[in-house]
Amino acid sequence: MLSGPSGVGKNTVLNQVLRQIPGLSYSISATTRKPRPGEVDGVHYFFCDQEHFADLIKQGRLLEWAEFCGNKYGTPRDFVEEKLSSGNDVILDVDIQGAAQIAKSMPQAVKIFLLPPSLEALRERIIARGAETEQEIERRLCAARQEIQRIVDYDYVVCNDNVDEAVRQIAAIITAEKSRVFRWLSSNDPANFFEGSEG
Ligand code: 5GP
Image (cartoon, rainbow, N blue to C red; front, side, top):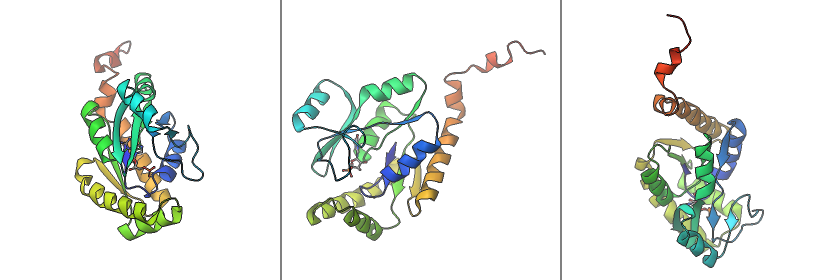
């Protein structure tokens, strides 16, 4: 799971991480937020109205969902469960509430927090995006302050001062996590390792 304040650059970083790690998939979230210029339905998000989102919740089709700055966001369950059951890894972009929900149902999930170099830098990035009103920008910065205080709930923190460096660090975390002994043991038995070999 990757969390971090709105505007920190999760999309940019994730796109590059996905190109570097074979077999890693991105879970496209559903949201009631309106698309920003350049955002494509089914690529950046599944954009939907309140009614459709309420149906997804009612039908249990979301692994988690949360309200953030007046909009709802949720992770479609089927995609994630299918990928995981076929042995593939999935990366989720979720806010702190979503990360907490996933951590409860999937305690082995890895939680990475992407930090901006400073709140001022974050403000500049949100302004440069040009998609929010001044009031919405303040709301997102206020949310950012609260989110950063929950960093204690995460396993790793990466500062997005330099995109290439942040990508390198996240790719390294994923690579290391894939080599954890408990993950190997979940699909291997050390006793079988010596089968067929001599002595
Ligand atoms: P934005 O509107 O900037 O795209 O996203 C706002 C916040 O919603 C970000 O913190 C982002 O990580 C979070 N978010 C995006 N998708 C999901 C999701 O499926 N579930 C949850 N809980 N949060 C999400």
